Image 1 (cartoon, rainbow, N blue to C red):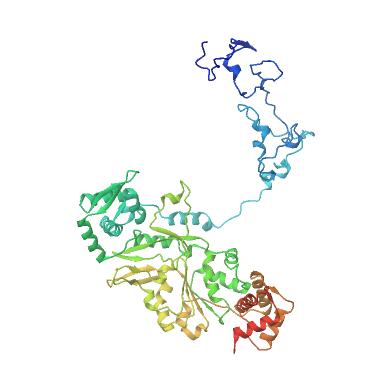
Image 2: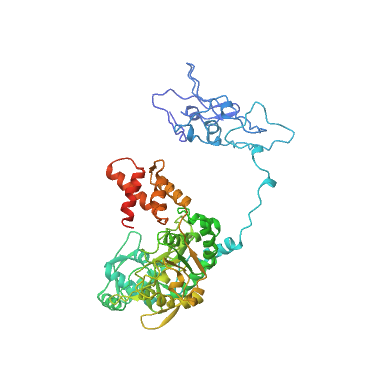
Amino acid sequence: MPTDPRDPFPPRPDAPPAPPDRTVDGRQENAFLRRRPWPLAGERPPRDDGENVSHIERVPRPEPVARIGPPPRLDTLDEPRRTPPWGAAGALPLETTDEVRRAPRDLAPARDPAPPRDLAPSRDLAPSRDLPRERDLPAARELPPPRDLPRESTDEQRRIEERAAPKEPRTWDEAGLDPVFGEQLVLRYLVGVSTESARQVANDLCLALPMMKELLEQLKQAKLLQHRGSTPMGDFIYEVTEAGRSKAIDYKRLCAYVGPAPVPWPQYLQSVRDQSLRSRAPTPDDLLRAFEDLIVSDDILQRLGPAITSGRAMFLHGDPGNGKTSIAERITRCFGDDIWIPHALLIDGHLVKLYDPATHEAVEPSARPGSLADKLDRRWIRIKRPTVVAGGELTLEMLEIQVSSTTNIGEAPLQLKANCGTLVIDDFGRQRIEPQVLLNRWIFPLERRTDFLKLPDGRKISAPFDPLLIFSTNLEPRELVDEAFLRRIPYKIQVADPTEAEFVGLVEAIADKLEIRLMAGACSHLVQRHYRERGRSLRFCHPRDLLLQVVNQCAYDRRPRVATAQDFDRAVMNYFGAL
C-alpha cells in the first residue's frame, strides 16, 4: 500500500486501509492528520463511544472579549483554583495559572481597558486580591516631591566614584610602566614557577592579556623564553631559557618583588585627590549608623559631628576605660563608602608595597557579566576606608619608607596606608619617643596636608597627608604639647564618665546581648555598694568586663546565666582586686 512520504506515522502492515482524504467543514483533511495521537490547540480529543472514530473534531476558537473592570478572582471561575505542587505559599501569579496556560497560544490575553468614570465594575466579578485596586494607587499629584539632595552627594559623588574606579590599561603607556620593567617582572615570575601559560601570567601580574602576549613573544624572540607546550584554548606555555634564567637572577638582585604590577606614583596621587575625606560630608544619620553598636551620649555625638566633617585632627581625652579607642575606630564608618588603593607603588624606580592585609579590609567588587568589574585595573584593590591604629609601639621609623636590605622592597609608612581614612595614635604620651618629638614630625603635614618621605637613595618626595588624625590619650592635652601645636588641632573632645542612668542602661543592654538574666535588685546593689559607698568612678567598660566574669562563673558552676548580687560581689573582687 503506498504511503505518503510526509506521514510521520506510517500505518502498520496489518492495519486496515486508511480512509481517503475528505473535506471537513470546507477544508481538505489529510489521512494521516486524522490519526494523530494528540490534539492540537483548539481541538477536542476523539470520542470513545464504542464507534471507530479515527478523526479529531475541531472546536471553533472563542473570540477574545474585552472586559470592563478588574479581572475576576480565580475562585469565581467555573473550575476551582488549583494549588501548585509546592503549596499555596508559592502559588504562581494570575498570568501563569492553569486556566491561562490552557488558552490557545496564538490568542494573546486581552489587556483590560481602563473603566469609564460613569461605569462601575461588574458586580458578579470580585476584585482580585493579588492586584491593587485603582483607589489604592496614589494619584500623580499625591506623590511626594523629590527630596532636594546636596549636589555633592549626587552628581559630584557619582563623578568622584566613576573617576576613582580604575580602568584596565591596554598599553604600557596607559599603565604608566616601561616595557623593560615588565620584562624584569615577567622573568622574576617565570624563574620562580618554572612554566606557565600566558593567560595565567597575565592574571597573576594583573595586566591585560594582549599586553602580556605581546611582551612574551618579544622575550621569546630575544631567546629569553621558549615554548614548552600549548593549552586546549590555543594559549602557549612558556619557560625561561638559560639566558633568561641568568638575566632573571640579575634582576632579583636589584629587586625581588613578584606580584601584581605596581601603579606609578602620579596615578596614586590622583586617586587620593578623588577619594579624599574632604570630598565627603557625613550627616547626623551617618554618625548614628557608625555608633549604633555603642552607647554614646548625644553631647558627644554633637561635638564629634563638626570635628569629623572638618577632616581636621582632634584630641580624644579622658579617663581610661570610657571608650576613646572604640570611638576613634568607628569614626571611619561615618564616611561609609569604599576606596581603591594599589597593591604596590612605583616611586622613581623604587617599589613600595602599599596594601597591607593586616591593616586593610578588602572588599570584593561585583563580578556580574558586563559590569564595570569586568574591565577594572586589577593592580588596584577595593578596600573599606582604612582605620590604622598605632599605640605605644610607634616610632619615627614607622613614619618613613622602610626598605628590606635583602629584597629591596619598600614598605609604605603608616600615614600613607591611612590615606583617605583614619590614623589613630592610641595612648598618646606613652610611646617610646617623646610626645614633642612625635608632634614636631607632623606640624607641617597638619598645616599643609602634605608630607615629605625619604626614598632609599636619599631623595625626598612630596606625599599627600590625607588621613583624619586622632590622638587618644588619658592625659590632659596641655600637659603633653605646647600651645603652638594645640592651635593646629582645633578639636579637643573629652570623653567623660557615664552617669548612673547610662551605667545601668549599659548593664541591661550588655546582659541582654550576653543572654544573662538579671535578678531584681542586682544592678542597684552593684551601683550602691561598689561605686557610691567606695567612691569608685563609673566607667563605660565596667559593665562588659563584670558581666563577662559572671558568664565565666556560670559556665564553671554549670548553671544558667543568672546574675545575682553575690555574682557581682565576686566579679568586683576579681576585677578590681586591691583597687
